Amino acid sequence: MKVFLLLVSVLARVHVTTGESAAHRCFCQVTGTLDDCACDVETIDKFNNKDIFPKLQKLLSSDYFRFYKVNLNNPCPFWSDHSQCGLTYCAVKSCTPGEVPEGIKSSSNKYSEEPSQDVEGCDMTEKLGAVNGTLNDETRQALSEWKKHDDESDRFCMLDDEDSPQSQYVDLMLNPERFTGYKGPEAWRIWNSIYEENCFKPYSVKRPLNPLVSNSGDIDGQGFHRWLEGLCVEKRAFFRLISGLHASINVHLSARFLLEENWFEMQWGHNVSEFQARFDEELTKGEGPKRLRNLYFLYLIELRALAKVLPYFERSAFHLYTGQSEQDAENKNMLLELLQVAKTFPLHFDETTLFAGNMKEALKLKEDFKRTFKNISRIMDCVECFKCRLWGKLQTQGLGTALKILFSERQIEAMPNTRKSTPSFQLSRQEIVSLFNAFGRISTSIRELENFRSLLSDLKQ
Ligand SMILES: *[C@@H]1O[C@H](CO)[C@@H](O)[C@H](O)[C@H]1NC(C)=O
Ligand SMILES: *[C@@H]1O[C@H](CO)[C@@H](O)[C@H](O)[C@H]1NC(C)=O
Ligand SMILES: *[C@@H]1O[C@H](CO)[C@@H](O)[C@H](O)[C@H]1NC(C)=O
Image (cartoon, rainbow, N blue to C red; front, top):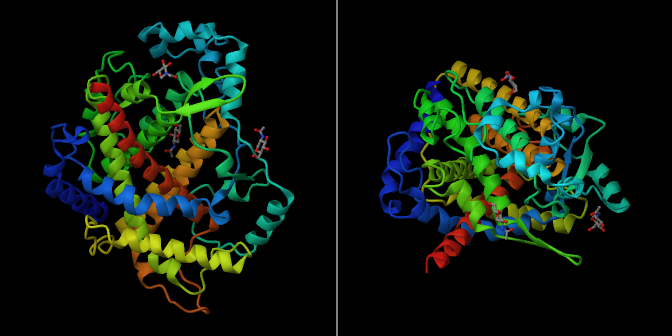
């Protein structure tokens, strides 16, 4: 525990010392002792939007990074009624009263009205949530070649996924993360079980099932965050990472909302009221800004992992193999450049003592985190919407990989730069693809916040 505590306390120090200047900005104005202003928003925004985001987008569009192997066909291991309460609000219709969780029945009638949506609505949701698994023969063949070059080793999660014969490659560029219509009780249940049962929660507190109705039940919006105060600092950090992930996904859904559909095309774009419903301070009873700060916290952790992992990618033996040697070398340069930039970030915390202390405790914590991540990735198998499942799994694995890196600092530093010896620290292709794509999501979210800020200030005028 002590070791990770160091990480967190160092992080906290960075935040405290840089918090003041950001205090006036809309996302860091919340007072309170729980989480000190988590970021110098301005510095992170500028750094990300100018230096990181454009480079990263370019890298992610390359062949190496756009194909992700994932098993989307695992059955949900935790509850069995999901096929009845299937997709979004449509499904509420087919649920018998006994199947509807208590919190929904009592909290509001908003959702019982929505089933007036007809079958078309369901078809629509299914269509939006579908994964386009199209790959041409050439790509398919190339991918099986790449596989021979993949590293294997100590993976942080989703072992079963990569090896399962049911796994398939998905072209991420064909399947952008955006609004899918997946919401309502089914989606809340997923997030609730992640928070409730997988975030080291100290004691049982009922979280309102519907996070948008923050005063449903007997707990107000503040209450949920209050239980966090009972957590020790490193587990609180774990919670904040998950919350940051959740926030990021919601930023995306608000930024790529289905605004209009007609015969010819679908129009995707920013939906400010959706964004406000999730993040506005008043509408969320103070939760929204905390969610956004957790997003910045997640950004810092993943950025740190990227800076730390540089020696691994610098080795001459490492290739971003796709068989096109010129392009591969160019991509590797692009990748290294990006990691160098990540390293120059001024607010990195000094973690020279990180995980260097008690090895036994660090190992135990690593195991705990590993197990929890694996579990969260299995919960993703309960997500009915396939596209949400895809991105949920990818981002969980990406975050898991980032933590694996932070937990392996010593091995990475001791990395031999020779062809012969096999390094004790390794990343599989899947881990690499998920790490960078997951960071790409967070980076995009930070970029989108700027868009929402300007849309919101336009509204005020
Ligand atoms: C999947 O993507 C391909 C390539 O863009 C496209 O031709 C095809 O129509 C898409 N399939 C579906 C079901 O959207
Ligand atoms: C995994 O998640 C499920 C569903 O939320 C939960 O019931 C179970 O206790 C979790 N297991 C572990 C080891 O965290
Ligand atoms: C934006 O989202 C809200 C729900 O938050 C929805 O009621 C509204 O119709 C959406 N606006 C557009 C233009 O789609």
